[in-house]
Length: 331
Image (cartoon, rainbow, N blue to C red; front, side, top):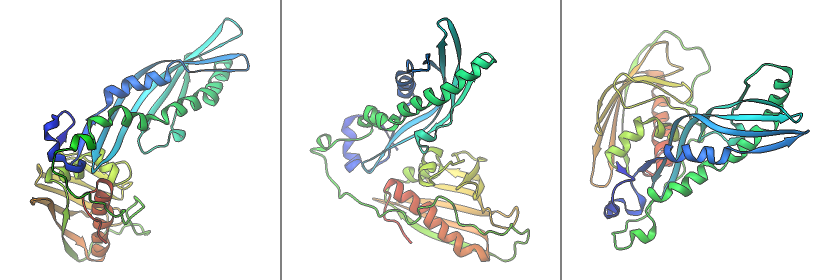
């Protein structure tokens, strides 16, 4: 995997911004958030509301580039101090807690928890004014977070056309949109039975236009998984790690890992018989300009085989190809 700190002479290896490049933007975010949120003011009914220091900053923020597309991935939390001045010499203060500011949540849907340092009728009145007038200002300022992250950091992960001059050029691949628009895995409406019945095996061979390391990391790193799965992703490249995708409709555990070559895990759909897990083995075979993913899934309930195979194509493989341009989607 390429890193944003690599020197410019390696540009020929990233023709048309083909490979995945990423940059940790937390240092930038820690400066940006206070710069746009500190000092906001609003006067309402002779009450002066104002924001103060930003504290308790935590989380992750990355900018990724693949096939010329810049993608921001972030999940951060922080507190904003607030103060209300009224009746000439009276002051009430407190905090606005932002527990989760994520890339897949619109700013106007941001959850803000407003607290006061004292408990009184006046404090509650000021708290209500903060919720009504200061919180919308904060949401408005954060609406440009992704755009501003790209503007400030995009040049570090994206090679411009001028920088590409003199290097070999490749044909720009334009993938079709993913076949599945919904990030929820298809499932049965009935409560899962405890009866397993006959079992079957699925084998699939799928080509991706990327390196083995790109595909390995895309399958296992939570930041990338939440992009192609279009939702929260519990997964990490560690043996023993629990897996939960598509709103908990897919779950399992990582059993074995060989970096850039092999992934073995247990795997089940929520609609399967209770406590029944299949075993998935993924082997990655790097070719000259692509990588072949060879999947073997054993102990799949016979009645679930077709649906399971369809879901691998629709939600995993097409999701990855559509999100990162790793080849044409299949059906």
